[in-house]
Image (cartoon, rainbow, N blue to C red):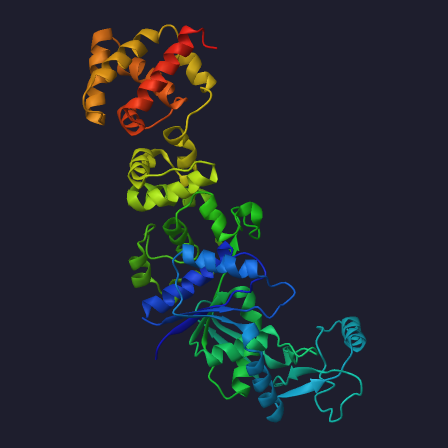
Length: 468
């Protein structure tokens, strides 16, 4: 049997962290078993579904590099197939037309609540043989009224539902549009889905879907319901916890491999291992190892992972991401070689690429002001001599490279009889505008001879003019 999983989001909003984790587990399970991963867009909610949300799903999946083997399929393009299966259920006696009005349904509900019963449709149209003139009916599935439906969940274990607790759900509305629990069964059947991996908020839908499969004479897929994701405080995940669009993580400077590594550990583990290559995730992933309890997000862990992948990532690849972030702060950086060099220089001290872009502004554009605290301490009449001496010696070197620059700084320190910091830090503030940069020899090499000398001249003039 070929394993076939599916990720089936509704395009009524962005692809958030919970949906991304579900997609990842579906994708990993298929890849682990050398199966197929299908992308399906469940867009039957025409009022809330938007093309922007569809594109956000595509963008998020592409950024995380979870490529589908089949699809994307759109439910709105399959309405005729749903009508066909609905007619099949009607003809077989597994569904019926219901003519109850909203007022009648409300009356049924109120009477049941008054008797302290669970509100549910009472099946009064089950045996109705004549239509109600002027009323467009819905189609309801005739759910079994006796016995049990058992879900052998791959995460939660065996879950048993009493069929008499499941009402006759609507499968086609009066406007002829199909409902969720019906369309997913038809889709999973037609797309030969073998394993449905989804959030545990869908668990109560599962017995209804299994009964529809049984009515169609089809074998249901296996199910695995993933526990929910909580905020750090144990409350339901919300925007303040990080329940934002997956693409927001890119905008915030996270790498896709860090986000993927973070997501895979939200509810799944392989021993004590924390960092996984994508190949290791595929090799080790087992749905049986998914925790039964909810997982809480940990923003600090995501930052730690992101910094790890920045430090160990390929600078040439990260250069493109850094360039993207620079454009977002108004800097057009050309030259992949320089961008990669900046990545190498900044990797150790950057937790995110957004931080790296902000800290690297001075490599690509002129700054207008010095950081006040850094200038007050390092651009003074006391440091003027060391800046002059360093500038003269730097201008005289033939090869503009970090080793040659380092030798100049050491010679200047020896000539002035001071510690390296008394020379390097004023130079750093002079050329970067602030008190933090990569090692000063690397910083000067990246800035280049002309820019470095020009900024040193500017700082010297600024001091000589009374720092105004």
